[in-house]
Each structure stands twice: as structure tokens, then as C-alpha cells.
Image (tube, rainbow, N blue to C red):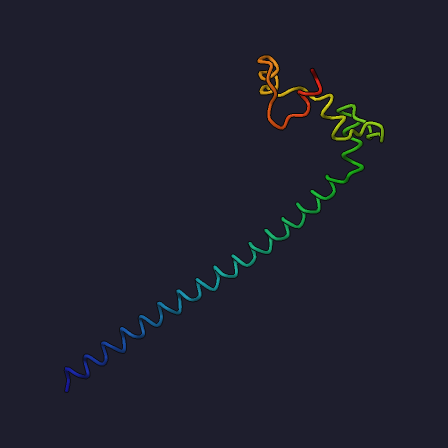
Length: 117
């Protein structure tokens, strides 16, 4: 009977030790979760600030002003817009078109090279 009592007492002490360790570990994990929640909230706030700043910096009127100041660009006029046909007439020929022209051949499906000759 004494052996059983000794074993039970040892089991109770070991169980108390394990429960104490688990309680201590759970407190640490709760604290870590709270810290991570605070960090997530801070990051979300930082992202919100960055999005607001990005929206502010990408305002069309601001970009147009910077383009005029630094690039010398001006707003597009209606007469500057080309149709596909007009663009095709003024664009540089591709290397394949140049080679075909040098060989005196026509590229398949190429209307431009036929109109150049």
C-alpha cells in the first residue's frame, strides 16, 4: 500500500508541475498573440497611410503639372490623334519588311509593302 501511495503522490506532484508549465506557457502565448494583434493593427494603419499618400501623389492634375514642368509635355490635341491607317503610313518598317523589300518580295498579309512600291 505504501508503494501505491508513493506512486500516487509522485503522480500528483508531476501533474502539478506539468499543469504549472502549461499555464505559464499559455500566458506567454496569450501575450505573444496580443503583441501580434498590436503589430497587425499598426501595419494596417501604415498601409492605410501609404494608400492615402499614393492616392494623393497620383492625382491627374499633379502628374500633368509635373509632366509640363519636367518633361515639357502639353495636353494632347484632337488633331494629334491618328487613325490606324495614318499610323501604318508613318511607322518605321519592321526588319522583316525591310528584308522583304530588299529581296523584292511581299510579306503574306502585308498591305503596306504593296502600297509602297
